[in-house]
Amino acid sequence: MLLVCQTLLLLFAIAEQLDLKVISSPDGTTHPAPCSLICAGATSGTGWKDSGVTNRAYYRIHYSACGFRSTPVVTVLGKTSDIGRTAAEVVTMNDVDPTDVYVYTRAGVTAAYANMMGWKVHWTAIGYTC
Image (tube, rainbow, N blue to C red; front, side, top):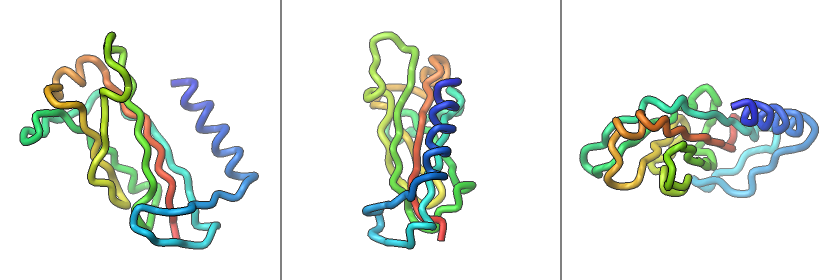
C-alpha cells in the first residue's frame, strides 16, 4: 500500500508540472487540456458480490468524486495473494461510465472466495472534468 501511495504522490507531483493531454476518450469527446484529470485508487480486498447471471463475482468501483463529465479512460489491475493466479486472471472490466466501472473475476470465482483471499483492484481513470 505504501508503494501505491508513493506512486500516486509522484503522479500528482508530475501532473502539477506537466500538461496532461487525453488523445482519445471512450465516447469520442474532446475537451480543453486544463480539464484533464488523473484519478486513481485501490479497493480494500472485501466488497466483492456474486453476479449470479455470469457465474463470477464483481466489484463496483465508484469514482464520482473525480468529477468526470464524460466517460474516462479506465485501467484496472487485479492484485491477489492467491498462489497460482496472475493479476490478469483476477479481473476484467465492463460497463464503464462517468461515475463508475464494474470489475469482474473470471468465471467460477465466488464473491466469498475473492473476499476471503483479499482480492484487490488498483484502478486509474483519466478523463475530463469540464
